[in-house]
Amino acid sequence: MKLLNRVALDPAQRKSSLSKQLGVTRSAVNQIWTRLEERNNLSVRSMIDYGKIGLIPVMGLVSTHDEPQKLKELSGWFQNNPFVVSLNVSTVAASVESVLLFEAIFPVGPQLSKFKSYIETSKESESTSAFISPITHQDYTLNIGNFSGSQWDLADPFRLEAVISATKKFADVLPEDLPMAISPPVSGDVESAIIVGALENSYFATTNEVLTLFRKLKFPHPSGRTIRRRMKTLRKSIVQPYVDIDGLGLTQKVALVVKASPTSDIVKTLIAQSTSFPKTWVACGTSLTLIYLDLPPSVDWFAISTTLSILDSSGSIISPFIISDGLIRKGLEGVLPSLIHKNHT
Image 1 (cartoon, one colour):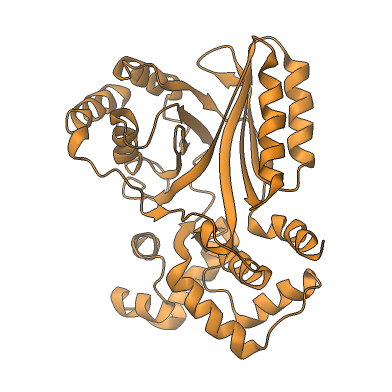
Image 2 (cartoon, helix red, strand yellow; image 1 turned 90 degrees about the vertical axis):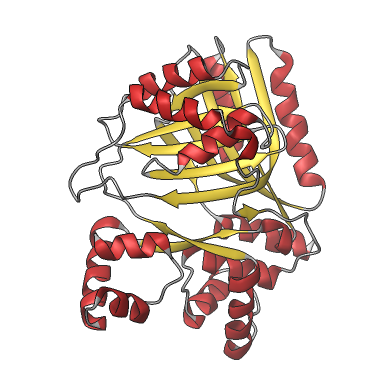
């Protein structure tokens, strides 16, 4: 657990640095790391400032009260759209809604406008609602401070309500920005996008791994020396590392959707408290915030929902949802073939 704690605090550390901090040999660190890779899919991945490679990330949801067939049709449409990188469906919620939560990455051009237009048409029915927003900030946190190695010790709902309520009182002095801001899109190039795609999968990707991705995509690649130089630059300017790991007993995935700006008190409060949970992914947009929480089964998500509804007097929280099925989960690499095709047309 000591090694995992160190990596979670500073994912950019090399194994040589970890061995010095822990007072063990490099070989011992390698053995522990390999065991965590095999058992828990441990990896150091990268968040991306998509705007700096000419891309626009968006997120949103579609919900319906009594038209499951319509939601099924929309789900099929999302799954067939090459720019959609995440699609989650909720069958259990604090309300009676059925919900699709999505994320997509688009190049600058007409594709995003067409995507938005199609989603707008889904709102023609009174029982269906849809929201979409560009992602302006994102963050991913792993907090294993309350994990013994076999079980989690998390605050019960009553303490959670007290903590969030206390935090909300100081919302006006909480920071407004998340660590990773998404820049406005610039003119991008496919080469950089491919290298960043490899870094997203592994922050410590090797030159050979990047070359393998170029060959897989059948795209002409620069020399190994050029790739090494560009990876060094891109690590500093475009990506930010984070630790991803499975198998820690976090079997519940809860999504909180807030229809409010990042500067609102409720969003700042939730973001400030989200880091106290074991595993959190946050995406903020101009008028929408999406927070995914990975929780152990001992946490009563419905009690959390009740707590939040009491504290959110503005009614901006769209009911918390249990994610029951991840229909799509891919990264930038899954979008690269479409970007290459667009570049050739």
